[in-house]
Image (cartoon, rainbow, N blue to C red; front, top):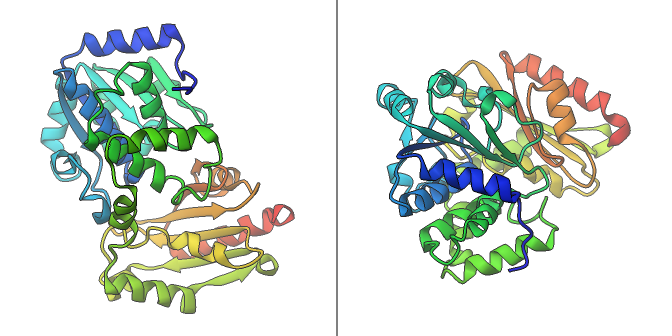
Length: 344
């Protein structure tokens, strides 16, 4: 393999020693876990279990329905549903891996239990500016496509590729695929495709994985898509930016289930000349508005997310949140578009 090592020899030795000295390990990811967070967590847990460790995957809240087919997903515990049990596991753990996030706030209601644990915390991520409060070992690689790519490359360094299970390979490919929009953004580096070729040697069916994620929507989701594109989509900046909203009432009307909003924010980018797409969606569990941003070329979604939406992310794919009501969130988004008009 020609993949360059991510960790120095000292970092690799320290990580290996930390794992060897631990017996009860918890793997966790951010609230609103996406394909990358779930895939990385399951694949990393698979590796740790192969070493004979007692491993539990605990996520703040459930992941979208279209990820329920992933191998091992049935073993995941959700803090939102079993707070007492999850808190006990975190308190008993001697090692916690934090995957696909590097700021305690991304855990939201699970933050206190994770940060209160006496276990050592290790971060594996691909976002900018990891918070030093997260742990003593912070491994974040913003240049990579996904946390799943980081996990794969660390596993290679650990000498774990030959023994990697097909289940873990499926999870890693899924995370890489979903965090790049099916390899349509943040995915131009040759190493990505070398990794894909290696994962294929494990017998994964990448075409079936794509169908399992993107071709499983309900009739209601298809009708919701048409409704948003026809009724809700607004254009700004001479057709270079787009914005749409989705309310709780509209979600109820279309029998919304977790994951039905996935990918909708990408659709306006199909318009010729479009540079930026913003989605504002009322959260079904908390009085907040969830913000998703997507862009093309060099438009900095992450800067806009940090400045206007209390969030962050990557150049072409970022997110954040705003307080209720939705009307005020729309005004904020419109101010953001105006402020960045020169870059559109």
